Image (cartoon, rainbow, N blue to C red):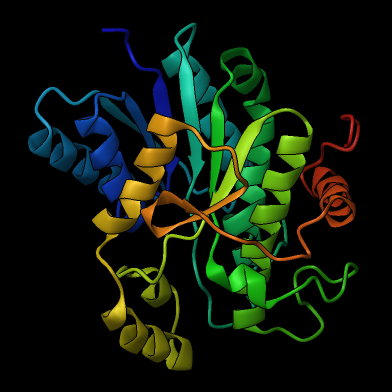
Length: 280
């Protein structure tokens, strides 16, 4: 049997990311997980190795909100994979905030983690992605269809912050990035994992946001259900741009178009200090 290429999963120590790692390992893929906490990375690795005997899993500790940490993760991925094959990059790391908070670069945290980290990680690994014809998968959300980019000069809602709008927009940005990558000849798509029982809305939040998520997640599916989407896309490929539960292709926001994708891509290059690279 031909050896399978490595799959990188960000946000891999809990929730959808952890469940996806487990599903991939059970199917024979080597996995590189990325998590923010060294303690959580170690615990996740030990748990996965116990759950899947013979699992080939390694973890990289990196706080992907910070661009220097993304670049650290890139160097570690290159060291681990070397001349081996990359099968897919799953940009799953994400978070929710209840108030305006910024990263070391001064960027709003939901925008930085949910979208910009995947943009930078994907671009820095682009040579490997193209070499191996690897797939790039982004965790988006049905909520991306319920918004638009309201102000191109204020992508991070500095003027009037709304946690909900910032979250929705970050998921729309992931779809626009997937669109851009496909225009560049890269196999890319976005995924709506559905309403999932995870702690994403209770980490680093308080007040109404924390309460709403505690109530809302009770109606969600187990992370293992959502993980099946990512596994299916890795195993079977995907002709479309946007998928939901059952790995079924879904309609996406009409705002996901060439003009908006090009505009966001060029802005993102500058935000990541990559302005000298060729824009789409």
